[in-house]
Every structure is written in structure tokens, then in C-alpha cells.
Length: 352
Image (cartoon, rainbow, N blue to C red):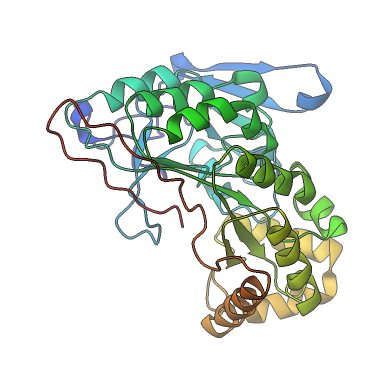
């Protein structure tokens, strides 16, 4: 495993420049890695690699399509085991398998809360929006044991730093009180990912996640606490969840949950994820392999005409069911206390 060779250029740009490291500094050293397994049903077959990260704030590459500049990722790898997950490629930087290894070899940054608190307190940190859950889910199963997110949210709350969370995990409800406190002093945006509601498709394509119904209950519970929550309808899977009746059923369920918005995102297949997904497709839906090769012949993204068609259909359904179509993760906005210093207010960026 290439712990020492994992640098800030290895697929995850970690940390602002003020920490005084060269651009190719390792994110953590091999002497800082502790490998554990737990013989309990929920963690059987999973290996955890506990590391002490040297930085936690990751700067998004300038060429990225993401509308935010900074992310925090307390974990690498994800037990959700979504066959389409675009982050699978990042495991190859550790010489780990991007298939089953991504699902079962989880890197845990055990010092994440205290490290983030220190970085947020740096004079050079400008209070920019921080996005979480954009690489792997920060509320995946491992969070139930390691409990990193309460400390992370607490640090962001104490620094009144705006942030957003995207998740498929119901464990976020454990931190409702912290999220409510944070929303009183800064902008907090929450989005839950629900691409479809078909139970058979969910069981095979997202085997480690809570059911779509349980995720939509998270949306409902957050709304009851006064925290607006949007739904990222992702991914819409060509030929499997894009039929008119399935799109309608999904948008109808999202509307019934009280979501403030719904934003569709068509499946994209980056290297690492593409191979794993296509192998899954050949096992479960072999008749679709040729159609996928043609649809994704030009790269990781479906053709623009297809993306526009799906977006239009979902937006029309969203209007029909009375929810906004295009502002996922719309943050709850509250009155901010007057700052003690003359520092400018942080700039809020939307999650998606």
C-alpha cells in the first residue's frame, strides 16, 4: 500500500498552502497507519486503516465542474458499495482495488475533528464554504463507530463557517441538534441522494445503503426541525430508472417527503467506476451492455441531448408536484450575529 506516495496531487488536494508543506508532501506517513477489523455483523469483511491526516481541507481543482472550492472527506472508500460510485478511482492511488477493495478497505482519518478545528482557526483561512459527502459519504456505516462528524460539525459551528452535506446515510439524524445549532449561526445546506425508488434496483446497485424510503424519511425529519433539505436525484440510470413512470414515482415520493428541491443528475462513468459498473451490468442486465457502450462512447458522460431530456422531464414533474426543480441542498438561512472583528462575512456557495 502506497501510503508514503499518496500526496496532495494524488486525486485529493488536501489542505491550504499556509501549512508550509511542499505540494508533493505525503498526506500521512506509513508509521501513522493502524489497521483494524471488527468481528461484528455490520463490519464483517471490512478492514479499517486508521490514519492521522496532515491536512483535512481539500482544495477542489480549478478545472472541476463543482460549484464549491473546498471539501472535507474524513473517509476514503465507502461501504455503501454503490456500483457506479465515481470515487472508486481514488483507491488506486493507494494501490487498493477499485472494486471490492473500495467497498471494504476504508481509510479513516481519525484526527479529522481536531485537525479541522485547527485549520479553521488559521489566520489565512477565509471562511469559505466547505462541502462534505462529495467524494464518499461521511455518514457511511463506519461513522457509527468512529463518530467523526459531530466534532467536524462542531468545529464548523464554532467558527460560524458555512457548509453543506450530501448523504445517503440515515445516521445524519444522530447529529440533528448539532446541525440545528450550526444553522443558527451560519448557512447550512443539506441534500439527500435518492436517484430512484425501485426496490429491486436499489438492492442490486446500492447494496450497502439505507433504502430510498428511509432516506426520504431523513428529508422529512430534517424539515420538521426547520432545516431545509433538497434531494439530489442521482444517478438517473439510463434504461433502468429513466422511464416516465419511474421518474414520476421518484419525484412524487420526493415531493411527499417535503424536500425543498429536486435536482436530477444522469449517471456518469469515470475510469475505475466504469469498469466496475459495466461488469455489474453484464451480470444483471447483459442485454444493455451494447446500448451503454454506444451511449457512453464519447467518454464518462451521457450525451448532452440525453441529459437535457432527463432534466426537462424531472423539472416538469417537480413543477407538477409543487417543488423547485434545480436548487439541491438549498441552505437554511438565519440571521447572523454581528461579528466581533471586522472580518468580512464568509461567501456562501451552493452545493450543486
